[in-house]
Amino acid sequence: MISALEIRLSRVERSRLDPAGLNDLPFGKYFTDHMLEVDYSGGQWGPVEIKPFQPLLIEPSNAGIHYGQSIFEGIKAYRDRSGNAFIFRPHDNFIRFNRSAERMQMPAVPEEIFMEGMRRLVDVDRDWIPPAEHNSLYIRPFMFATDSLLRVHASDNYKFMIILSPCGPYYPAPMRIWVEETYVRAVRGGIGQAKAAGNYAASLMAATLAKEKGYDQVLWTDATEHRYVQEIGTMNVIFIIGNRAITPDLESGTILAGVTRDTAITLLREQGLDVEERPLSIDEVIAAHHAGTLREVFGTGTAATVSYIKELRYRDFSIQMDPSGFTVASGLKNKLTAIREGREADVHGWLYRV
Ligand SMILES: *Cc1c(COP(=O)(O)O)cnc(C)c1O
Image (tube, rainbow, N blue to C red):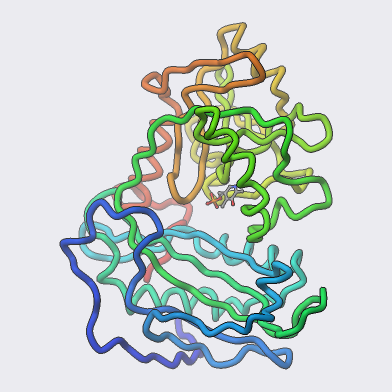
């Protein structure tokens, strides 16, 4: 693709990369040599810069900090066995990013800045993509308000950035989940469908209380009746009941439309499984458990891809499951990994070449 996007590139003098250190990395803790930065002011986007990763200077009166106009995305890049680099479905994240921006009254980021800027940044730091299987480079695009003004308002100035974090293999242990009935993640009319920073701050208390009770995460329920399941922590959730896959629909605007969720639905349907996107109540889940038809529960998201759930705790009642028998989830995980790493044909055009 021929691109008119001009990027000011200033490289680090010496790379911090230690190839031996690219194994077993904790998630999101280490960053590559460079970052992308572009400012919005006076109604337009300024020059796009790729420069050495470095701290930012922020006014104490920064409106983004005080009032929370702040959104982000999470995407992964991979290297196949021949050393080619790919980004998984980044255009879907671009679309979602600008939907989040609109909901938060922030300017849209032009497609060229988001897509071509990301491609160039990953290319500059391509040696940071961990080569071995199951490793990846996590890509974090984000935007926040930069007005210096203590008044609740939609900012006139913004900063869009992309940073990159190499990640080692992510083998999450099967999770114990608390079905949450006191706190809520999102309400109809709220910002649940936006990847907005405030959603995550709002979720922390329930997660902390669940941990104190010995659970890894919460299964959010709807804000009105606490009856319909929503998401698990920051993952979408899929239930295998009988020979159907059931996942909450997106109609209420309270659920983040995960790219991995969409990928999972597509792959499960291709396997001939019936996938239903509809409201699913906790009563129906419990009834399925009693009937012996609740076979699997798992979460989907970019970070962990597929995470197995081994226990659902609802009030005094606990549903125990054995993830070693999760054939649908493990098949999905293997298939997804194979496509991402180039071992299986990419028939949907999900891989974006760097
Ligand atoms: C990011 C996110 C997901 C997963 O989305 P993916 O596009 O699959 O990574 C699910 N739920 C919430 C609340 C999220 O923030």
